Image (cartoon, rainbow, N blue to C red; front, top):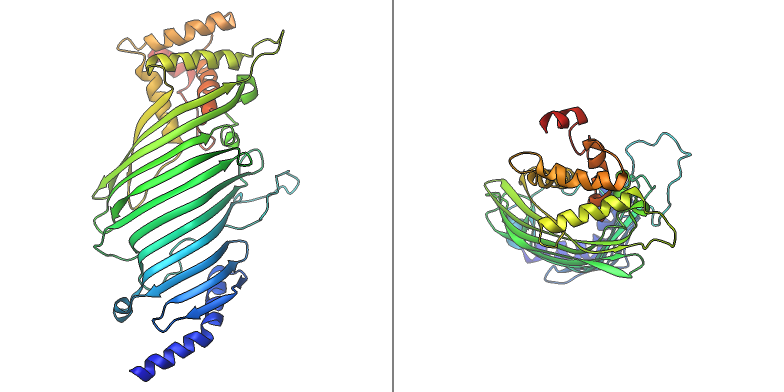
Length: 387
């Protein structure tokens, strides 16, 4: 047994670097390099300066396998630590047929990462997983403006009992990170904490994202809004969600609030645009409904094994809040909104036009609805039939 252990140790120590590079290249189909590979007598593996071309960089990796897990035919690590990992993700259009279309070029140019877990052929798990000072760079080349780059930095995370096979252990997780906006002038903050039982499909977690720069994310909702006409120079949002689930049924209680908005002042003699006037009216109405705040509260029902969450959820929350204000007569909010618009515009306005104008006002504070399908409200003739 001792001879077998020594033989295995020497083989990994000598051939381990080449084997690791080969396996990673086969998995990712990219060039892989690393500067240091060492294995201690206790089978603790240390790797330095690992780079997967245009996909990931890791300054230091430390991992130690579980002998008990290996004896059971499972690849389980007692500890996995990543220090200064950098991940690069790129979302590209499904099909590009016109090469003349202008798109912003952002380096590094990367391709989509392989689906997590897809190539794992044996049960895999980590007892203690730690990330220190990580970073993710996401480039979305599917937006109307050509591309948008979103970075998440200073990622510090700890996960206990992460298993990609049925296991009764409860997974505990905590993650904190920042999102720099506009050349690090401002930054958002991410805080995620909770636990889940993947076997029973139970979960309890809290997610908070503060100081979201809605103007930076404008390419996602530019189809709906003209920020210049609405005179919006700056807008910040805070988002939070209490997540709880039992037996695969998950509910997300969400809260979205406008925390700060800066409007562009009118120049001397400049006429105020229609979208700007409607923005004033809509913001005032929301503040009246929420004691001076501009916010949305809504719940999302989904499944743990097939989670569904998208910008349609924000759209539906907005629509529900507008309809809620109409009262039993189904007329109250329509009157309070349409009459000021008539005064502002000097004439009657259809409900569909009003809804579009309200979108210009409300969605300009950061709700990303570009991927939503259909109109925000029903067709005009259906609306008029209901009123």
